Length: 364
Image 1 (tube, rainbow, N blue to C red):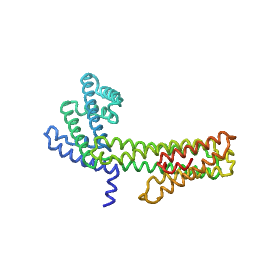
Image 2: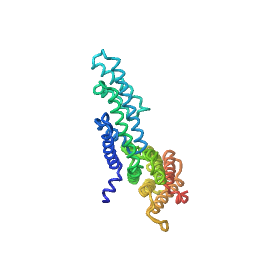
Image 3: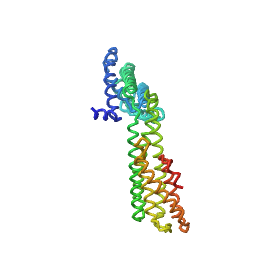
Image 4: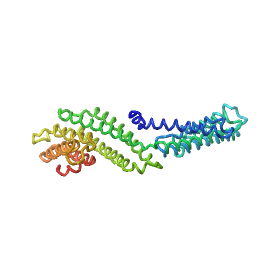
């Protein structure tokens, strides 16, 4: 039972259930209509499936845009057919399709439903040309009825807020970012010069993860529109949004850190006049930041330090050593010195973005 409940929390499973229920209801409603419509009841489930999307806002948008695109296709086909009766059918169909494809470029209005223009136009000229009025009523009317049922089912049957999906994307991005930092820390400890090609490839992987996380955050914002559950989960949705944007800011900062280390490799430039092991100090700072990234939440009740507190303390201590190293270095090697200082600032800003402010005051 628990496994089924967890499965139903998945966006794909929820959409499948809603689409199935909406299609069944649409069919049942359609067969009860007058014979003019009920004989073509199968168009209603089509409209229901078209309208079932991950969010209520997307469902409503898909419903009216799909029906509008169909009506535009029907009208286009009918007008062109009437004007080209003396033209061979092959040329008429070719002209209709060409014009329909042109109309589909009006993406600002039709968006992802634009392809229905050419689909409906071809149906009209090949199936409904003999009785254009009744055909439009059956197809567009039943599709509209089914789409309305799809929107209603989406709004009533566990209307999705996409919170679980967004949390999964944030967690995945945190893991990729932490792995990135750990690997860079290992390179620095070994005293190696980071290979620009290798880290460019790693940045591409991080970019893909960030794109998916940002898309999931936008999905949550859209899911809150016209959603009866939005008020109840407002706090959780806002927390997810803030967490996503914090990870996004850290990713930008880490990208800058990586570029500095790859380009200037301060651990190999002699800036460590205090013999403190620059590569190790840098590595500890990056590892500390990765630890905070990997432990986003407190697990205790606040009366005693927990794992996140320990990770923050370790990260701040490492930052403190890095700041001390900058202070004891000189500017004789300008590029290495300033890169080292920039890394210290980047780590500090990253920890601040991750909510470690309560301990950052000691790292001055």
